[in-house]
Length: 110
Image 1 (cartoon, rainbow, N blue to C red):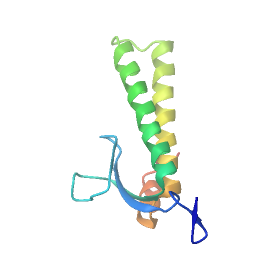
Image 2 (cartoon, helix red, strand yellow; image 1 turned 180 degrees about the vertical axis):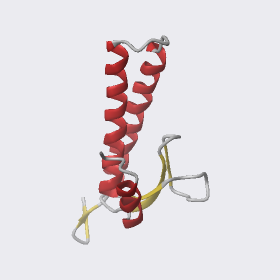
Image 3 (cartoon, one colour; image 1 turned 135 degrees about the horizontal axis):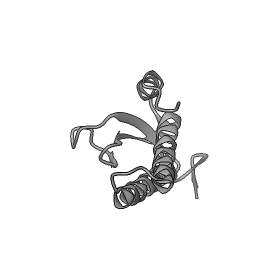
Image 4 (spheres, rainbow, N blue to C red; image 1 turned 90 degrees about the vertical axis):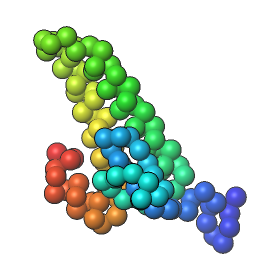
């Protein structure tokens, strides 16, 4: 459906993201956050899915931890790191200029 040349639901709004907590907030006063992004509904859903994948990888990592690092643990850790890098990549894509600078300065995509 179109409205004034735009697809409804494609309008971007500002959201505030707390990566450690896996939260996407509309109100920047609701909780501490690290990043501000501009996203439409589809992009927001994509980010939420990435947070869910990260949480699953984190649970798998905690479940497999035995105190000794095995090949399986290394694969689990690599999967977790891959999910986290995917989140930072999407945050960079959707981020404000300040968010992009923060991600670059902290080398989150390296």
